[in-house]
Length: 484
Image 1: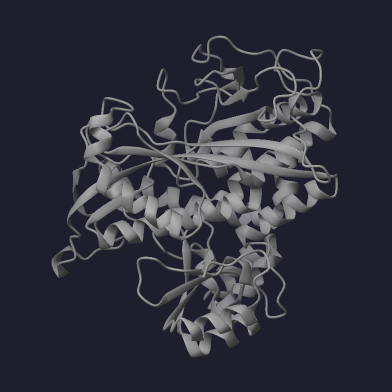
Image 2: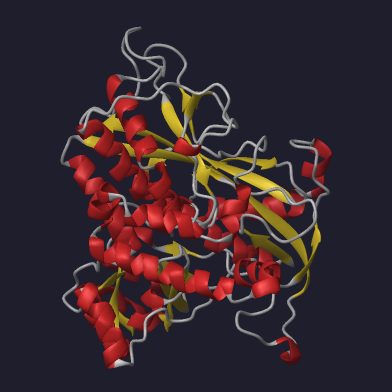
């Protein structure tokens, strides 16, 4: 059984008994887009679903190494953070928060015998979703859209790498924090995009990816060999925005586990530290629909308008995305490693510009004539480690500002890699965090409490990277290759 929008806890209880499910995993999507949680014996799971499951609150305060970025046990040092951000006070002395399950996310895991899974959200003890819960951030952004009569739909193009797993490096003498990256072998040699021979070489792990996704009702459209060695791409069908974010989070989590059991290692790290690597991106397609009719609001109804090919609202949304592109990089590219992707002539952006069909621009307009029902904007900023809830929420806040302010769309750029300091994207996570701190619209959208909290966690990560000195390349591989 996989849940539907109408699934209840009573339905789940009947299924657990009928199919002899032994274990239920309770998981919430953390600040990094990773699932954390607890596993309960099935007979205790229903009560936890209905009443919530306590977990240590510091899980929400971890950086990418799982180190706590706030001194919660030091009342003086932690008090300084609370003075600036009073919402943090709930985490003093590693106090508990509550995981509350969403019955519509229930799945039976295809790779783990007699094991089910359900997604939760981080709440206070009254059941209110915390401002630090990333799924809640997207839900609030989408609620703001809905209040204006809009829905958002998203399509995902996700690049990643799969390797044959040679050695997990789990011998005691290799123990470290973070854990050492595994030793791996490529599954195809790369440098021959969409090559059918390379696709056939990759058939076994790709079938595991496909079968896992289909068993979880994830809407995979295509599986492709990308340019880089051992690099692949998956394309999803268009979904409602929250469904798309849920699908992305579950997909990454699921295929890493299913492939590992079969002797493979999947990583969504943007640039694994190997020779001749090609960066992985996550292209986020987006459009607005009329909440009542479902009609695509970005589709132009006549030939009048600017040269974007979009409706006036679509052009304003795009103008908002451009205006807040630098700040949104903090969510689209949340790792230190991801900024090395912004290189010229590699179909990755360097400037906050747009183009019709341009794969070198930050935003690519896909609109084929009047009344194109598939008219959309493709955001090419993102890397595949991005927390999907924060990435998509950033688009809502930025695009909606463009619509409400009726921002004029700048001229299209013909040369995406011409130097221009005025619209240059951040070249580091540090620059992106500073841009976020200066962006009033995104600060208001996510809330000052969340932005302050997120910036502290990322600053903790950056400080550890800088302390690595000459070993920074090794630091990136240890930090991200296994985690993501």
